Amino acid sequence: MTEVDRKQDRAPVPTGWTYAPAPESRDIVRLAEGYGHFIGGEWVDAAETYGTIAPRDEEVLAQIGQGTEQDVDAAVAAAREAFANGWSELPGSERAKYLFRIARILQERAREFAVLESLNGGKPIKESRDVDLPLAAAHFFYYAGWADKLEYAFPHRQPKPVGVAGQIIPWNFPLLMLAWKIAPALACGNTVVLKPAETTPLTALVFCDVLRQAELPAGVVNIVTGDGRTGAAIVDHPDVDKIAFTGSTEVGKAIQRRLAGTKKKLTLELGGKAANIVFDDSALDQAVEGIVNGIYFNQGHVCCAGSRLFAQESIAEPLVEKLKKRLETLRVGDPLDKNTDVGAINSKMQLDRITELVEAGKEEGAEIYQPPCRLPEKGYWFAPTVFTNVAQSYRIAQEEIFGPVLSVLTFRTPEEAVEKANNTPYGLSAGVWTEKGSRILWMAQQMRAGVVWANTFNRFDPSSPFGGYKESGFGREGGLHGLEPYLRFEA
Ligand code: NDP
Image 1 (tube, rainbow, N blue to C red):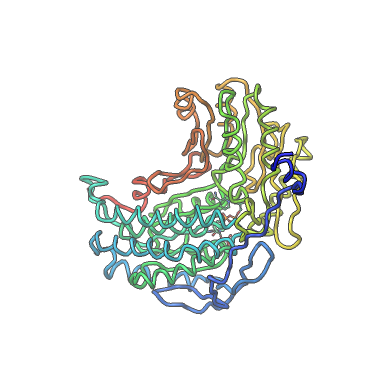
Image 2: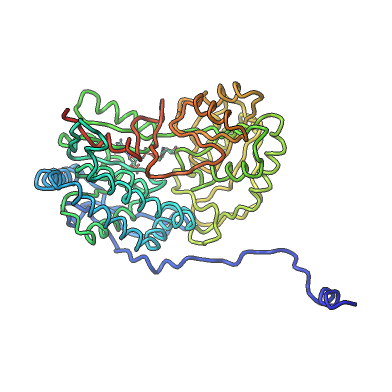
């Protein structure tokens, strides 16, 4: 008997490998009991408050101000004063210094912000740590670089700031959306009144401390918290020059109607129902990773999520089989655990919406698959879900679910794929999986979507413009294009 044989005799055969919990400590986050509004560089008490919670267990994290019309008015006045008394006249190279400082402080405090983002929003720590925070800092770095080069970006057009920007952001990427909005606005010499989403205000409020650390002049950035009524007060305020909104198509349309006939500039980044199209010549295992990243990243709370999978008929069956196997390995659970792939649903309201649409999918005749997984008892959770047997007319193929729910459809020819993929009121993003470069280029031209990813999905970069067609909105954020909404041109 050899030594190896003898060892095998004695060693117990492992029956399965389990993960040990790997929780990220939340001690790094120090929250106040309550927060007011950040106006003119000072904290202003709120008359009315509500509790913001952690969706993983419904723990109340802090009391938050419900901004009134008076609060919005004070914030706009502070922003106007800061605009008129220095900020808009500051040389671009000086504005850039503040943006660089903010970027560096965000990097230094990245872990604290990542933990807080996961706590208040429910997203897995590995995503807030590896995606949200690095990208938020990168946006400030990127736009810091443009601040003193605006006349080169727009030669012979004499770019000038528009004034006070009102910015309203959603709950799916709270700090990242804040960075997408504030960085270009400040780089162009504007001042800001920003409202974070009702359910995820905490990173925006702690960000005010970063602004103080960076010694940004008072009033350049003002944060007013609250629900849709506070957002509406910003939209309607007569002294706001520009509105930047990210959120649902429904609210986006309402804002557009309210601004019709006013001089306010508007950009809308709204919903989506992206097609992720897999051709039979693609590397299927890679495609499966892209599909998973496309729809289960951030629990599917992503406007550009690849929520409709189009599989070429000849490979549809093996692709779905591989996908189901892969779903069995996804770990659903505590957002603060470093092994978690799918975290908590952001709110009870969103969970109800996902549940309603999934029920509709079942009733309409689609076949549901959910991998075996034990969901925590407290908090808001939804298992990763795949629907097969889906017809184009089903609600799950038409409406934005904004949750970890994928609808699988099939196609035979590239022309059919294009026709079906474009058969949606939305037009934000799309994905194409194929070995053929010529097909990628052809598909990219045919897709009516602002972003088309090839052999990848959900890739973001501050230098790359992002935005939609049709009911996904208009205007671009990111890149050189992202400067334009914050400028007026004198020549
Ligand atoms: P909303 O569009 O209501 O929220 C986006 C932001 O707008 C929030 O800050 C919100 O405040 C604010 N808001 C709400 N009503 C008004 C108003 N009348 N005037 C001005 N601002 C307003 O999205 P929801 O959070 O209600 O989500 C509903 C659905 O929208 C989701 O199920 C999803 O399908 C979609 N959605 C899409 C997003 C995207 O990035 N494309 C992002 C978020 C949601 P408050 O937080 O108080 O509601």
